[in-house]
Image 1 (cartoon, rainbow, N blue to C red):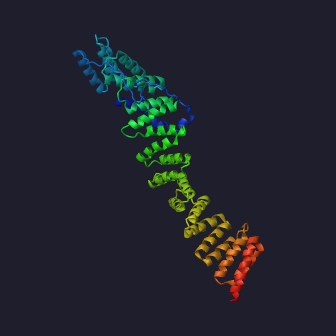
Image 2: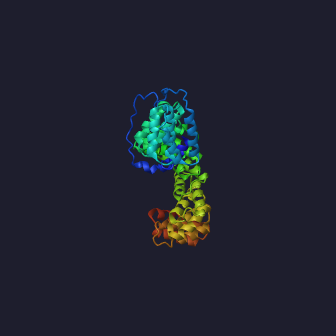
Image 3: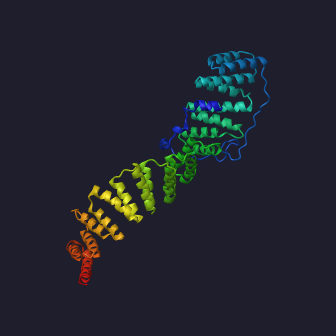
Length: 432
């Protein structure tokens, strides 16, 4: 069975079933029957049907001939092997011997990519019902696989149900095959329990199987379950960006922004985030959740690496992050790059206010002078008051008086009241 599955995997690769492809699939609710058959694969307490399997014997001549056929098969002489098997069907054979020959012919046809003929002889083998349990079950499973390769999903499902009748512990591969069949029929919710069980039973996580389960869960807005599955994907494939993005997206759909940030942050620490959109989303979410220092570090690191462009929008984002983090030197450095790009006087005002926090009075004088070069500057009174304050601290009282007088002349009513108060203060200081 293993070699057969490998032979047909390229055509039916689940990896091709990406999330986008299911958006056109019906998501109508599926009602499962109240009572499954005892052997049904979704029955929690399933009981299989016993199948008679007595010891089978093969005549010496048939056995000897089959050994020769096996040699031809092993040497790649498929036509020769098939010719000999076909001739043997004219012998006086027991039902068991016929079943073995039909099964062998099926293997040859599979290697020849003659799917229709393989299906025909496998069906004859199964109808005889004389092989041992393991051989019979393998043949039924192979038949289901062949129907799947032809996209005959109903026939694949029917064959698998026959397989489950006598299979005590069905392999994960049988569940995923059933899930794919229902999925391809446009019944994703019917497919989901089979895919889920396949992922549980799989000895090693299968990326494409897990992807399919996540896709269906997302499509049906079952985000809690989707997170559980995508955590497995991100654990075993931590280098893949899409799983951290998917996890964050699920959390955000559930309005769990903190968890979304944790997912993206972990992806970033694992060097899995490589798209600028992902990095920018991480930075913006950090800023939104009031972790500005992290946001600033992320933006600056990726600007330095060239992943994030040093454009106006990104520099403003960086400026906001450093300012919120009260890292004034870094914020001022950003303004020194951004302001010449935009020629916006308000950026120099912001620089002056940051310099005020540091007590850099000469720096304030220069920044306010640069701000006043913007003819479209709003709130000009604020600039003159800030400039007057710097002159006052530097004991340049005449210059301070000029600035406060300008604030009275051009400022708002609030500016005028503040400027008058400062003028009184400066007069007192100058008198002393």
